[in-house]
Length: 625
Image 1 (tube, one colour):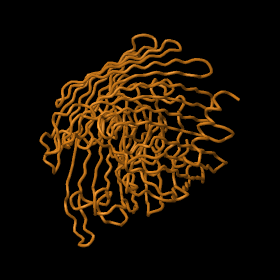
Image 2: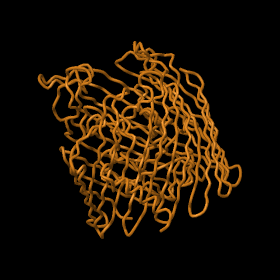
Image 3: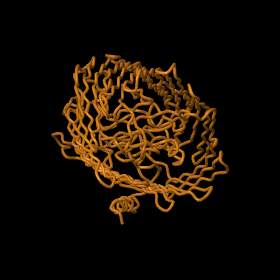
Image 4: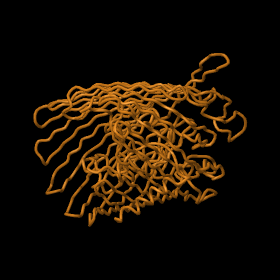
C-alpha cells in the first residue's frame, strides 16, 4: 500500500466515527485550481505557501446546501455559531480567532459592518456565488485590518469563457415551508461577457430561542414560542470586456434584501429588514507580458432597520437602524523581474461611514495602506514575502509583514512554512458608541506561525498543517466594565484534509483541532475562548451510478463553552445528511436531500435552537456544454 493511504484512511475513519457526523460536500484541495486571494495574484492552489481551499459552483450545487453557513460548516479551520436557524445571525470563527478577525471580500470589495465588525454571512445567497476561496492564516500584510484568522473571498456568478448565450434556472421546496427559486442568463464571446442572476428564498423557520423573559442568563430574554421566518431576495450583475489589446474593463453589483424574524424585546426589536449591497469596477492594463496594472473601486453597504412587532396588538414599533458604508479604491502593479520572479506594489484606500439612530460621536474615518510583495521560484524552492503600512485616521500608523517558504520533494510531497503578523482596528461600536465606547483603544495585534506538509497524486491528495497564533491588545472589559486593550489569547491548532477518488467513489475528509486559550490575567486565565469547538470533522462521500448520483455528509463537533468563565457547557454533537440527484436529461436535474436524518438536537449558542430533520427537493436547468 502506498504511504499516502494510511494517513488518508485515518482521517476518514476519524471523520466517520460515531462522535463525528453532519452536513455539506466539497473537495478538500483542488489540483490545478487557480486562486488569487492568497497573494493578490493568480497562482495554483497547490503552490500556495499558506493553506487555501476552493469551493466552486459544481460543488455548491452538488452539496444541495441552502445557505452559505450550511456550505461552510465543517470546513478546515471553521467554527460556526448560529442564533436559531436559517437567516439568523451566524458568527464564523476562523482558526479559533474572533468572529471579526476574518476579512471577507466580494469580487475584491471589502464588506462587513463597521459598527459591529460582523459580516452577515446568512444574507449572502448561494445562488449568486460562483466560487469561494478560503485562506487560513494572517494576510494583513496584503489586505490590512481584519485578516488575522484569514480571508474568505466570494466571487459572484459569471459566464464561462466561450460559452455563448446560456441560461440557468432552479426551483426548490423543503421542510418548514422552504420555497426558493433562481434564474439567470449570461453570455461570453471573444471580446466581452456578462451574467445577470436573480434569486428568492423564503422559509417559516423554527422557534429560534427557547429562552424566557425572566432572570439573567435566559437566552434572548423573551417569551415568544413561535416560528421565526426569513426571506431573501437578491440580484447580481457582472460583466466585462476588452478595450483594445491591452486594456480590459469589468464591473459587478450584488444586492440582497432580507427580512428576518427573531425572538426579542421592544428595546432591541424582533424583526429586521436588512440590505447587503456591493458595487465595484476594475480597469486592467497589460502593456506587455511582464507588466499588469489594475485599478479597482468599490462600495459596500450594510443596512439594518429593526422593529418590534407586537403579536397581541398587531402594531409594529421602530427600534433602531444602523447603516455603514465602505468606499474603497486601490491601484496594484505586478511586475516580472526575472524568470519566475514577481514583484507587486500597491496602495489601498478605505473610508468607513456610519448613519444610525444611535448618535455616534464620530461617524467616519479613512485608512490608506501601502504594500510591497515578492514571489519567486527557484527549482523545487519557492519564496514569498510582503510588507504593508496602514495609516488610519483614528489610531495612526501600523505595519505588518509575512514570509512564506515552500519545498517540493519526491513522490509529490511539499513542505511549507510561513509566519505573519496581523491586526484588527476597533469598530465604531468599540470606539464611539455613546457612553460605552472608548476612543483611545488601539488595534488588536497577532503573530502566527504555520508549518505544513502535503502530498499530491493522481486522483488523491492530503494536507496537514499545524499553527500557533498569539493575539495581544484584545479589546475587553476591566474591573469597572470599561473597554480597554486588556485581553490576550493563544491559539494552537492542527488541520488535516484528504481527498481520494477510489473505485468510482469521491471521498473528502476534513478534520480540525484547536486549543483556543484565554491568556489574560484574571479569573478567566487559561479558559477556552467561548463558542469554539476544539474538534470538528467532516466527511463527504459521493458516487455516480449512470444518471443517478448519491452522496452522504457526516459532520461532528466537540463540546464548547458559551461563556468566558467556562461555566455554560454545550455538548458535542453529530449529524448525517443524505442526498441524491437524477439527471432527467443533459439539461435538467432533479435533486433530493435529507438533512440531520437522525433528528439530533443541539445548540451552538446557549438557548438557541437548531433545525431538526429536514427534507428538500430541487429542480435545476442548465444547458449541457
